[in-house]
Image 1: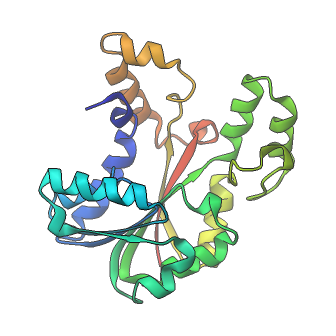
Image 2: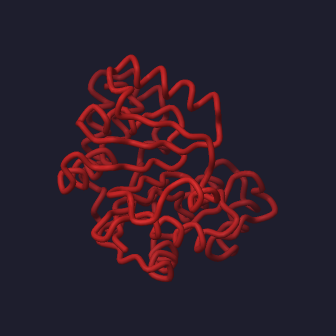
Length: 240
C-alpha cells in the first residue's frame, strides 16, 4: 500500500465497518473523483455511483474501474451536491460518502438535508470534513499568523477573507450541529490525519518502517477525544 493510502487507513477501516452492515450495498460517492474509494468498494461486491463535477476525474475513474475488473459495478455521472435531488431518487441509497465536499458548498445545511433525502431508512452517511482547529495550527506554524487568527475567530463554517478558495473549516461540534439540523443522528466520530500533515514527508516516506509506524499511531489516536482538535479532518458517521 502506498504511503498516501497508509495515511487513509483509519478512514478506510471505518468504511469497511459500515459496509459490513449492507451486503451488496448501493453506495453513492459524492465528489468521488478518480475513484480512490469507489473502486475499492466495488471490488468488495458493492454497487457504487460516483457524482463529480470533473469530466477528467470521471474518465480516470472509468479507466481505473475497468483495470480493476469492476466497471459493471461503478457508475460515473457528472454533477455536484447541488444536483443531488435531480440525479438520485429519494430513499434509494444505503451508504453515502461525502468526503471533502461540504466545505465547498454554498449552503452546508441544505446540502446535508439533500443527502438525508436520498438515503434509505437505516442508511448511513460517511462525512469527512476539514477541521478548523488544525487549520489554525497549520497556518501559525507556516508563519501565516493573520490567517490563523482569522480562522480562529471566523466562527462555524466561515471562510475568512484571507483564506478565500480554501473552503470552510469546521469543528466536530459544529458539524454535529449541522447534522442534527438536517435530521441526522451522529453515531461515531474519528480524528483523521492527526500527525500525517505535521510530519515531514521525507521522514515517513523514506525511513524504513516509518510509514507503517505512522499509520499505527494514527489508528491509536483516532478515537482519543483529546487529539480531535489536532486532526486535519474529522470523520463522522451519521444516520437519518
